[in-house]
Length: 453
Image 1 (cartoon, rainbow, N blue to C red):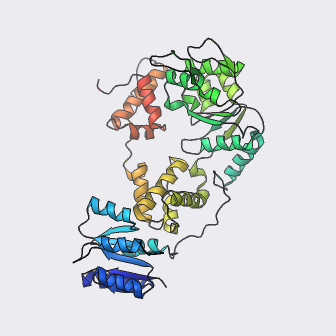
Image 2 (tube, rainbow, N blue to C red):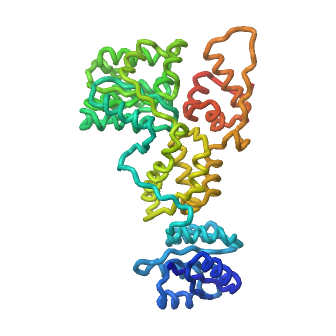
Image 3 (cartoon, rainbow, N blue to C red):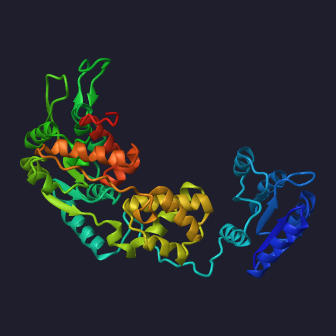
């Protein structure tokens, strides 16, 4: 049975907190000041200290400092009704596990104490850990993907990976590289959607000294750096028609000519591309070159969205829990509770696995564990407002026009309509459009979009 030392000069708060903790099966020891608390620490085996900060005489921060200097110190939760940024930051630097403001709900206090003690609570779910891997999941769609990776990894053919943003396309590309014959070579990743054409050419092919203003030395491009290994081109569906021609030329002859250079050189690179777009539709609409598509798509692998493999969520939670615990230097993170998993299972996950990781990280940062369904719900709302929450604005329909227009013009009008509906908020607009914010920024620049007119 764990023992909690409750330290507060207010006897009413001290006793009510102690009674609440004892009702859930914990032992308590009480102290009214820092001196008495230090005596209790010497006289009892204390597993957790719950202490007020501002008390007559020495403060709870003094007690926290003294505890942090002990061998195998118990964790400390600080309480205060007069919190400041400076006090909170100092408490965290000294080593406080948590910080709770008065007045507090006793159920919240109990949840914080349980998280600090690392106790298994009534609805905590035991998850059998999966094998060590960068990709977690055992849904049939994932097993099919694993088999596809294994089939193509050892073959020297280009691969196109199809999947929504945040689903893990780069991890699939890295796995293909690691399981193939080029594992000893470099793996270079480039996000095509985040780089304008002029810079993208320089990024891939490199440049000679003097090719640009202030270009004082030769620069090796990604194709040269990936020689003997793998080059991963993410968001290949966003590159312009002009750059598609340049990429096709490289795929045909394997020759790299840096910008401003007179000499070319041949490289041996395996190309893996990825996109969240329907690339076959882009080909049918004439927005992506058919010959380039066939050069890139020696084999296709589809990454399933998280909403189609909800049964993998517990395994993914366990996977990210350990990673985030290592980031935060926490020995263990309590949870997940069944109530938290229920919140996760009910969500649509438009941001896929990347969104899940960020929700878990925020929940742990805010509550110290994965046991509080309310904390998980808040993290979901903060990261990705859903239509069900009534925070996601509806996109204004594109107005019909008597004249037929080009695809670029239609796209421009639709983006303007969405931006106006969101009050110019590019993050919300990108979410509605189903693209990343950096991709939207690139389109705004390319299409010369302005909301001022």
